[in-house]
Length: 217
Image (cartoon, one colour):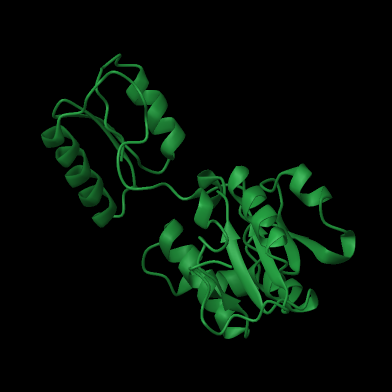
């Protein structure tokens, strides 16, 4: 079914998709359904696409606001979820504005020394596991959609291996510092790195320079 599933996976137990923005959760839902896995939906207020929501019967979906960790756990249990997976982006700015933390979330956040996407979603994942619901790898059922190693863009430009290695080095260091996961370089010059604003904003900034030969990581 997917190489990212645990050996103990039971395909008869419902999988709850905690869905953020974008095409990713839509594709994951499609792939999971094609695999015959019973699917449930947790809609994140203001994030999940209406089209994805409408594809689930009311009895197989629930809505929570971003930050309602206690309600999230209750709804996962109500839907009978044996597994859960997080997919799609949550608007980064909601960490500062638009967050609706319940008592469970307030206690969870108080225990975090650093508050960023990795630590917050990691803590939510821990709470899901504590509730007896197995949190799956976010790549489950997406095997056919994953990028392969190598250059993906077609064109006449050839990227110097040395410049590509430089971009990879910067991307890894950026990730190590927990700043972001992407970088744009041009012939040895760093044009933009991904930070809190996200990948799309990074690409828009880099595009304003009009540089050529841009290996992306």
